[in-house]
Every structure is written in C-alpha cells, then in structure tokens.
Image (tube, rainbow, N blue to C red; front, top):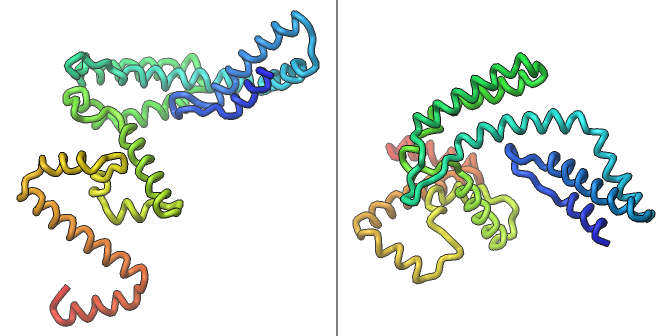
Length: 250
C-alpha cells in the first residue's frame, strides 16, 4: 500500500545540517501524509488508514519544539542566502566581497533587534552573531577571486570518495593513517582516472618541477616512516635517536 511506503520513506529522511534539519523535514512530511490520509478517510473509512493517521498525529507532541526550531532555522537560512551569490556567465560573482559583508552586517543587526521581540531566541541569535563575526575575516575573499571556493563541500565530497575507495582496498574502517601518511599528495590520486588521463596530467609538469616535488615527497615519506617506527618500538626508537645524537648525527 502506498501509505505504508510513505511511512518507510519518512524513516529514511536525511537533513543537511545546519541548513536543512531532518527533524523538521520529518515533521512536515508527516503533516502532509496526515492531510492526505484525512482526505481519503472522508471518502470512506479503512482500519489501516486510521492507524497511519494516529501515527502521523503523534507529531503534535512536538508542535512547540517544531515552531521554535523552524523559526531558528529561518535565521540560519536567511544568513546563508546572503552568501549564496549568483555567478555571471564568465564565472564572476555578481557582488563584491564588500557588498556581501555589508549585507551580512545589516542582517546581523536585524537579528540582534529581534532579541527584544523573541527573548527566548536571544541565546541562539547571540551564537549566530558571535560565530559569524569569528569567521568574518575569511568569509569574503572568494567573491573577489572565483578561484577560491566559497565552501569546502567539494573537498568534503572528494574526501568521502577517497575514504570509501581506501576502505574497499584495505577492508579497514579507519583511513586517517593513510591520509596522514601520504599528506597532501593523496589528493593527486583519483581512482576514476584512466592511465591516459594520468599521463596527460604528468605532461603538464616540467622535469624540474617533478624532481623538486619528488624530493619533497621523499622528505615527507621519511618523516612518516620515523613516526611509524616510533609507534612500533618507542623505546628502541628513542635509544637509536640518542645514539645518533651522541655521534653527532640526527
């Protein structure tokens, strides 16, 4: 039955904190299901529909919480919309960093004034203002230089892909050691690239630049080997280090 599928779908709803909260989405979806079931029951009754209606109406226990959280989410969404500046066809933002900063300042001033009208929201508003001001020094450079990403969402998605691939290869849940071991060089690995694509990228790098980067990579790897050596045998590692120190090497 379609309505039982909708309940299963509600249980699988996901949000996108801090902008789209899953709890609010669940509440609103249950409200829509409740309204639809009510219309069906007005046509003719059915025991299963009545049970589904009873289930969806349990949301009323959280009516007040929903209103409070929904109102506060709107504060966050209002601020986020200011930062979401559209791009021109040439890839430049339609507003400068100064213009965006001015809009943000005006929005925060408006939020601060709301504390008189909504005293219960005052701590939440203060938190938004404080965190935004803490981040302000680095929030507006991207609008002057499109090469600077506005968010790190793409990087987070890439990291997720990288971790999933490493888990499939090793069977291990933790991937932090792999990323730490290879450091910044891990970003050059893309499991979806073909050999031809890798070679095409290599051809863009001069032999001199390649040798310089390779030396840096060797140094980085040597550091990670020392770290692993210390983890495996800390006493032995310290003893060898003391011996090297005494002989004038490091």
